[in-house]
Length: 401
View 1: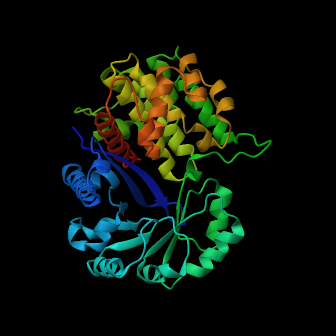
View 2 (view 1 turned 180 degrees about the horizontal axis):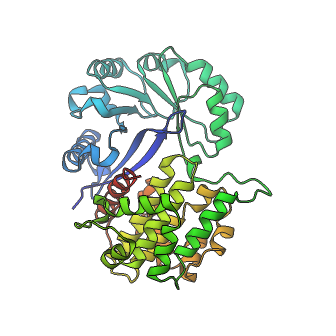
View 3 (view 1 turned 120 degrees about the vertical axis):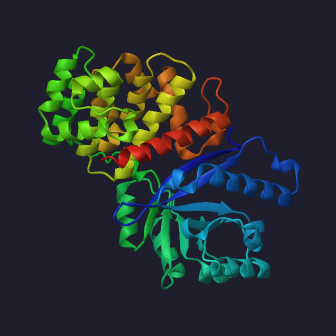
């Protein structure tokens, strides 16, 4: 049983490649309010360390960096930090005030090879010593006027320092921030559609949707599905490669779609084809495909854990929840052209029904909104374990593309 809930949020570089993940932690069952601050901090530290030891940092973030928040106690007492520095960026929270002991601690942390980031930074001259020690400054741009962002950038920019924009909501904001010289970006802009009035789907997008619709047709037979896949040489090649990869769970080599259906089931094959079709079409960051896979797998695992029927439909709902961002088109218009069960359509559009509840739970875990996470009788540690399993599965799956 897990002792901690963990969520991760991607941080992108200027090329929209994943630079790092911020890890959000919440101890389960602890009550720091009833203990001293030091005892609470030590307990939290032990939980995080145990998580890294038990799960392995590579399982959570792969080869990427991990950003984690540390409180004043740890930053002032570097000996308490027993995590490997190579893959970590330690964040100084916005409520940490500078003091002689703190600055001394930060210097020691830097000397030990850790990177430092100032979180949710708001400039004041008393923070100058902290700025001089920071590798990265994170600026929460949500609600800030462009002129205010530009002034703040001019004040804090130092040679060799990197700037990270938090809570970037749109691609327009991303483009503006990029023009100001921000190095890294965090927010949901990559997973939201860029809607333009009057825009129509491109010919390629139409072809992909038609393919997805054919594959997901409840009346499609195995031979029909095989013909659909064979008609696209690239799709056929990738499909067989995918099925023969470790993520499929098969231990025997598969050389035909018919054989794959017998071994995995028609519903599973439909989902694999859908994944490949959507991933090949999207010109968005690959992390959007990862997000779609995490949501899909999370929804499926929730259904299986709750022993609900047709878990593959939960998978499909999670996968299609990113369709609007992939196609830059309203989800309502995209869903109406897909032969999905009415329950699945309602789950996608208004999050109703059991499938909708599973999708909501997946979205809350994605955001690290632990206070709103829940599904059936599953407890928070169980949900966290399930979500981490989905993350690992999605990362492994994307390595097969």
